[in-house]
Image (cartoon, rainbow, N blue to C red):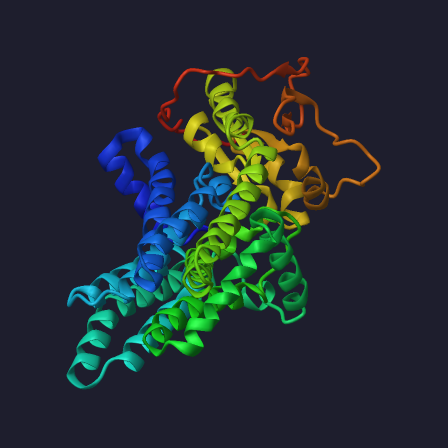
Length: 444
């Protein structure tokens, strides 16, 4: 059963149909470009063209957006889709409700737990229109969004046994009120750390909200969009790495638009030339901070190179490992299948009893069990397989990649080959997905 919602895999399948084997890897970079563009559109519709340019610059240099642009994950696509929905909501065209509904439907398929954003958009249509126009816009929106929600509920019921369950587990285990204060502190600190304290200039946008009624609806939508996104994740599980700010990407486009609106308020509200000078100076300070943060994380070179490790490990497995190999893995479970053409098992979803007998069960089926892990996953391996913290892993090493945090392949067979571990080389050539190795299980 899949752990991901179907939206991103469907987009990647579309990418395969359009671009072949490279197609799936274009979805996230294209989404990153769309995220910048729709953030520009949203800010322009709130506070004018200059605000749009400022917001686009903030989105283009955002550390979390750049960081996640290198990963085939749903965060950047979700950010682009939901920001597009917010921008289209402010459109005065008759097709606006259909565009918003389509974006919301796709957003639900990509990130189902953000259904509250769809409810917010529906509420905005109801509260800002009247009579037949209200019914038409709400009806068009629901015609797109409701089938997507029903489809997710039906898939969850089919895959996991309940419409409220997902591949990530039971919501009762994932959400807890005790997480709220910790996550609030962490998300706030990560946002200031990565984007600079000057992001607080977004609060200045509340001035025209209070003083200029024509802007209230647009600014209210942007503020609500960002805050609802945050509220969706405050009770979520706790993480201690800054890039888990990624969860907030669906609302960060709205936040960048609010920062731009605050800068626009300063530029027009403070007498010239000091207003424009102050707004420009604050924008440059924010951009300088974000770019320095990006550079410190080596996003413009070495970090990109480090992501090649997935293809390196997969290519090594495809060329050097036996055809009957099955890999227990977590971080590399998908890429071993894609690049290595071998079956994988997620060790992190096994209980200790199942994990202890699984390698022997595979051997009885005529398969050779291996473990492929990053060094950071060793504590998880110890927990799942019942290895004491003060003892080394009990399996011999087959191969090792010392760069990029360290990656190891270990032999879990009852009678391993016993050969010395070999280095996993770096393959600079381009990759294509090998054909999946088909293994016929057999009794031993």
